[in-house]
Image (tube, rainbow, N blue to C red; front, side, top):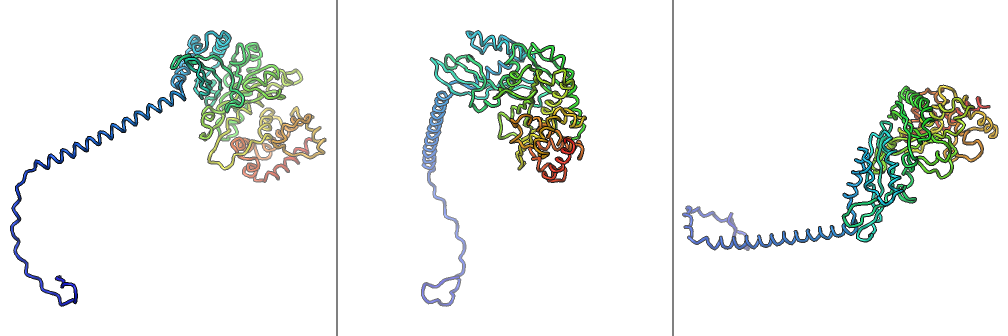
Length: 485
């Protein structure tokens, strides 16, 4: 449409008739040389700029890498690769039973150190390891020393004994290492346990049989391996059949229950003579032990290295230590050895059920009356709890409590009152026997497994027995006092 000039709008005008298309204009002939010259100049300038930028970037990266390398050299003058190579060769030497190579890292001028590690080597070769690896756990306190350095090295000895350990477990050592010159060979000048206060000091499982004794003796059965001081070889051979029978009985009883859960196929046991040795094998007891035996659970090496990440089985294996100088091994207790063997192996058996479930909202503490009561139940079964050696003490304690009885909580379990601990063992035993009698053996084993897996006894009584914990305890108390009076 044709618009009128600004102002008053008049009527629309008329379209003029279209004229014919004229021919296109004739192209102008000009030279293209100046275009190529211009493009070439621009391209050259671009390449110079880009090349300069890349050169500057590479220069900066190189300087950054050099600064990082210098910082790493200053902060970590001892290379981790050299430590890893040393430990890999140490592992190979043990596997190949190469004493010369095993001793190579240790200071040859320290005759005591060489003698100790020679003894350790020979002891280690007697243990039926299915896996054995020395691993670099951490390096710290790198300190200049002349032209070289000295530092502390925490070494993890990751190992499985036969098929009795479900997963590798770990014994930690603390090595003092010297490097006389930068990038020179490493020399171990001392070996000790993890120092007190160090993060790993509470669970280094010091000392082991191969660390502690001049010579170890190993006695194997199908389901057990007994590791004892060489002086107790005769005792190990004498008791090995009873330990094997206890292992078979416990494993068979558990499997017959039908409760899900992988238990060990065998057990590692040490026999000692005296409370001192009982408290100084696989642990260093803070006080002289009062028990006749102990089952020491060892977390998996994976758990030790990744405590927050692990989701699943926690215990890789257990170590049972039993004192032969207790009343269980006297003429007055002819059935004493089987009782203590079954009791401690029961602990090791169900400890394998301990698990970490990151998705579970409930991580209850294990109830000691469940833990010890189940071990007593396994020790005496199929005999009832009334066959227990603790019955006379139980009657005395019940009279002292004027007939009132309750399941002891963890806070009062290790009472120092005379006879009280034995009474607590008996009460736990009666509770297990009561559950088996009223609800069936399978329910008992489910109850124990559930508590080891992190469920509270309060929730388990409701879940498995359909009664509150208070009602369960009331019914149990009536059952016990009726027979114990």
